[in-house]
Length: 449
Ligand SMILES: [Mn+2]
Image (cartoon, rainbow, N blue to C red; front, side):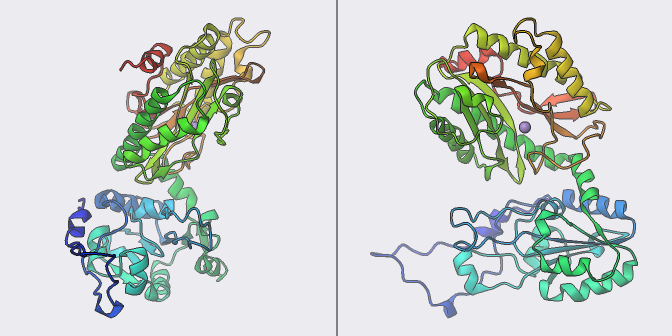
């Protein structure tokens, strides 16, 4: 069930506009916290997250799982320029809540409603006047999360102790970079109990996306496609790379993207041959190719799409020949994408194809020599998503296919990257709406549709 929290939000009637000057702040004592509060975040697919928690408990068999949420960053103490709150991925996977300073406890066997507890800090009205309304340990949080047992974080240690005694199994914690500064996690790892890493189990669950995850990815990818189209339309010789970046990211934001999934790469001319160039400060010149590798993030999931286009709207014969080989390589890899195949096999198929169809395009060498990175990676909440790279494809897995050829001596780099969902019968392009053939790109840049 999805709970439309924005309806709840509707009860906060705006104050009437003052006749003149800014309104005087209401004295703190006169301000009453609104019991029905909005959550910073989107509605939770409560059925989907409950199913993920049950799946996790089933994989553990017996034990206790404890996961902290992310904390708010301190404006002026961390990075003044960036205090954006982004939820911890493990916590988000199991709750879809974008709330700070929370903890999730799951006891296995079970992992159902009776064996799951959400801990939230008590609300702080004075603090909320600065940072906005928060979820607190009350019935609003229970409804928003679909977790009936919501307690104050004050009771976490006591409830955890009794849960561990009852479960008589290991304690699973997300032991990774996301929790290395979490004092409670550090203490628990040294308390002499059987403490194990939660990540391998959660990572393998995250590898196969459920329907809610696929719909989030589709949204992020659709927004990204619109951004790439806008970048192609805006491009003109003499434009600065950052102007093309601005055209792209304006469309991301205008369409509701929460942020970029990674720094946008807009590399023109020589910069098109630098794989992760993201300075974006060069002025383009007539005849340049522009390589744009960018993905919007929406609902915690990110796209990862690359398009390469001529800044003046016309590929030279040389650029087109290299481009068409990269594209044909991508299609060959896609045609082999189906359940049971591995990324290593796909990589081999792509390299063999590129090598066999190089002709004299890359001089004495075959062009796969200039294809200097891997073909694919998993895609999800992380742009290079978690999961074992030797896992044979199963329906619901999402990966990129991204061959490239980079010729620095010619200032000529081409990468084409699409996001692909593995289906029972093969695969589906998720980013197929972004123009991809030289003909489609040239038509779009001439002002066609
Ligand atoms: Mn990629």
